[in-house]
Image (cartoon, rainbow, N blue to C red):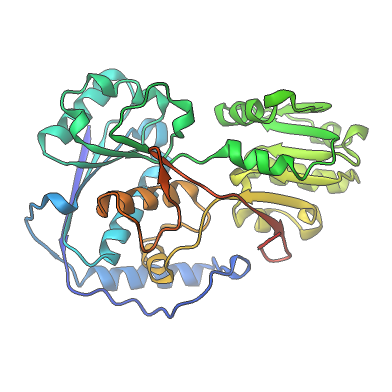
Length: 359
């Protein structure tokens, strides 16, 4: 089990950023800009001094199984540290890698949290890890936030756990209102792909044709040349790479869907770089990430994290803000938490030649 600690105390953090409205269509991701961000981050971090601090108010433990959700770890850690820097407070962040979600790993990691008196915990477990928590002594004394899980997927949730998982059901229900009634569907061969498929088919929603997109070996020409796709509402519950290929092939095969719809899964600037505008001109995407403080967003950017497009980081931001403010109303987060679940609002975005714009 890997273990990392970050303990900081610092003076005022000044970010050269005037208030502004986020423009999704004008985000720059050039190498020069990235290099400047890293240089700025190093300059800011040099202002901080390392101390031995013990203060319950700002002591946070982050627990994650690297073999399961390792791709989310850096963004989550940097988002939390950025938020605490933004708050200009001393803090102690302890990062514990449980490696897996097996019982022994979860038990050891969570007992370490309890033994070290970390009362606030960001827990990057899936449902597989969650099921082991009831066996941890004194875990009910912790305030736990789980960014990856929506409460609707949990039976008998513990009252001290708050859930931040994306509300895909609400997004899909909103997308359904845009349908012309002739529905087709492509979905990924994955846990998430099957979950989104099950949500789409709820309440006997009529889908006249659907196709599972495999990780490899797909005949995209055959898939996208089906006559049934013409004048249909095509739901794309596929990863960004598969979505980009499908959109491009639909153009090549001269398929003409009435509209193409997708969830948060494809709300990413990568879609702009991986496709041509004509490929995605008729592509609408549901997004539930709200704008936050421009200064906070810039602080997060300095540590190479993203809360504009990355919903896991955004959910984590909601969680650390909620725990930091002792579950009181936030001044920087618009989302509210009701019955231990973050409430998300769905907004539909259309594609432009350079990015996204509200529908």
